[in-house]
Length: 216
Image (cartoon, rainbow, N blue to C red; front, side, top):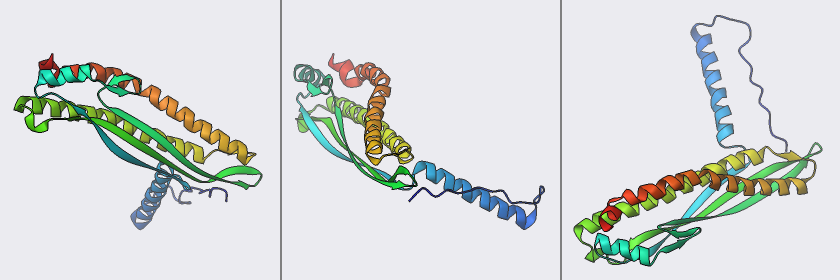
């Protein structure tokens, strides 16, 4: 079925509105605006959901110095070398197209993003000194917020993709399927590129954390 088109019309006839007519006009305008906003946020026939699995890697040491030394000697391997935390994501795109009026359109598009977040965890939490526990918790919280920022960025990009793909049309459904999947790949590349400046800022900020200032 083609997308339903809604025609927005003003209340005809009067320039000066008052009393009940004004209230009726305002209610109609507000309702129509709300419908328009909802259509932008969640297009009909498009859905995006996400799921996150959490994993942890062990960090040895009981003081700030021994914790930092352990992480330098046993670095966690991320996607681009040594890292303090990591976020992997995978897309699951379910797409249904249909021919209508000589064009192929999207009947249903569902995008699921599965995340796997790996975070640091002390191997000896009961043996940490009070100051080391506080410093390590601050570092672990920083690492989690960092990866959560990346996750939120990918979710926003996924929503933008779903909204854009839902409106795409071509003459052939085979072409439309290929175009939409190509758009998803491009969206992912662009989304990762947008986050590089954030990573550069965070790589500097991490060394100002208490754990690294005390750990040397």
